[in-house]
Length: 349
Image 1 (tube, one colour):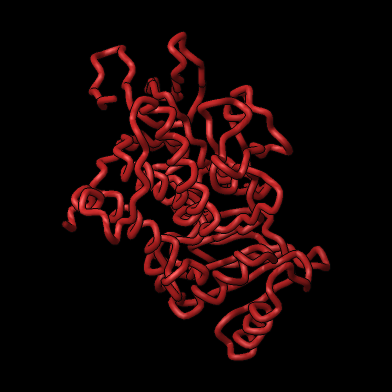
Image 2 (cartoon, one colour):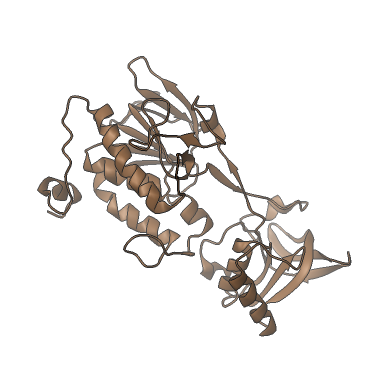
């Protein structure tokens, strides 16, 4: 099937539609590309990488085979480089809003931006859904978001020399306290109690930095924000004794956890189990023929929510997708190390 640029009001036809452009969705492009299957990817985020780049772009990952240490952003960049030969088409900042089956057996996906895609195979690689940070119940916080209030750290250097306030007691709050302390002019951590839900090693290191004067810790909660035009100048803190005081800061990072929203995928008529998609372990196909689920969005006996598991699922999914997309063609299993035709596709022959 050829990938065609649509005329106005006409849907784009392709081989495979992938919902989600995280690491698993990106690697699926590679496995499908080796089989000459063209892909379009839809992602609600404005960039590829999914959870890796949205939540921990500079946090190290240690369990990718053959790569002792890699950040979420680096892994995304390497995957994008790997799939360059296959010219996948991306639709960022778009949410998969509707899915219908056509009379010829193919699927038509529509997005909230009006994009329409048609393909015989749909692959859901949406992680656990859309990750939405929990917004603190602080009046007027919306006006400061993305200017001086941040729910994720994308570039550590953007916080160099700032007076940073971090709120939270989980791994994210402690991790970024440790990572940002070396670049901040001043860093203060607040949590509503003197107890944490983070790794003990991180908690111990935070207390060491407090003793060294590199971090300030208060048992307190943020009650109000003060500033103009999105530029934060100070916050009102309330201590355990309910006494309040003004704390100067120009960067506030609240880490109160994430809310995972499945969104319209939950309305696609799939047989969901606790907001996950049950699949078989031979093809990773859902109970609806032609719709596959790989990565954290799926469930099966023995499921491990690991990136490497998702890579395996993508490889087996691609084999099954080929049989749907090209039922009259014979599937030849080949190795990239020895197949000249695969090496030609990758541009390394």
